[in-house]
Image (cartoon, rainbow, N blue to C red; front, side, top):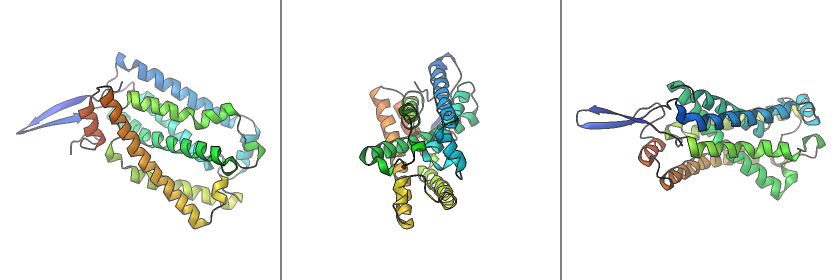
Length: 260
């Protein structure tokens, strides 16, 4: 269970409560085990992507390699998050806490977005998600490792061991900067490779693709808020520290441990 520890400071006529960082202890063992296993699973998925195969050969020959695929970008962010979370489990460093929370706030909604888009489009019209290239047809085990396992691991960790996302992280800024970086990257890669990474993007005119990009960024922000709201509801259901958690989620106590 997450432990949103608090400390109190008294000023004349005013009492304040601040969220503090995790404290390394035996109570952290379930979180440590979860983060270690999760990091191992994500590492194995990454290794499978780069093992000699038609898929890795195809990616190696194109500009941008595997990084043109949002799935791989999301997997990289997830790997960084679990590595930072595992490091945070062994330290009371405020920097470690802030870094882990920041990457978690990107990884959870991003992997949720990836899973929704991937499985939704693949179920409705698979030809719009999977190019008609034999090398890009994924074995079921790798498909699940890339498009289902990360989001399951992240959701479990988030709901059980983490506090809600802090509003001071600004999901609109995260989505905007991520949109600009990723879309610029794949558009440049498309010019050099002669194709966009996903077939559903190739069917649209440039301004229509822009609308898809912006809508995806908007969905990221919506998911951020919905996921956070679900966390607070789970906290209430399990009778966890809902007052502190809600203050943190609403930004009354920000990620830098300052009460507003």
